[in-house]
Image (cartoon, rainbow, N blue to C red; front, side):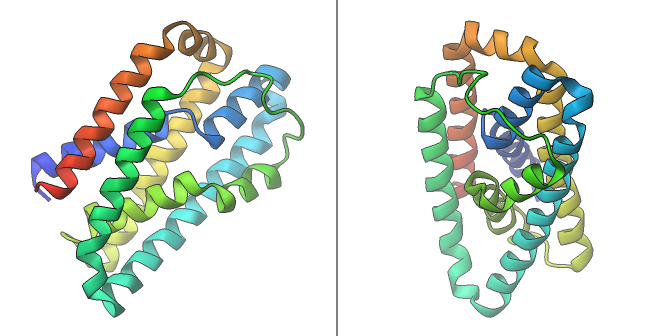
Length: 196
């Protein structure tokens, strides 16, 4: 993968995972309402579930590339469209209320959320079909990107956990420029995916 594609990949991966989404909002709200200590099991559930979904996305993408290789060139356009939709949604979205979701802080709640979280499922498939498989095909490379994707995704959730209420206040105060900056990074990632 070229340096330009690495920049595109990292821009997409980091920007998307740092943007408000089900994982980040759930963890932020749990910590805001229950504190870090009481929310630890929920956070571990998110981490482990995210890794499990990345394994499934990686395996699905490899099977797709192996058994339906003619679909692979089109997947980058689907990925591009998805990233552009995320950019639009990010640009127009407003901050969520910290009271938007309350309740259990169990491991299973965080774990199960990953399997219904369309954002990370499409994120994982886009990474593998758009950025990984066009350049790498070995088991070691795919496994390495599963680990890297998990580190990026769980790292972003961890940042939201650490930031807690502070990040929530900053986003509420400066939400418009933050959203526009993230949206522009997503547009760059989308265009790099199809213009390489």
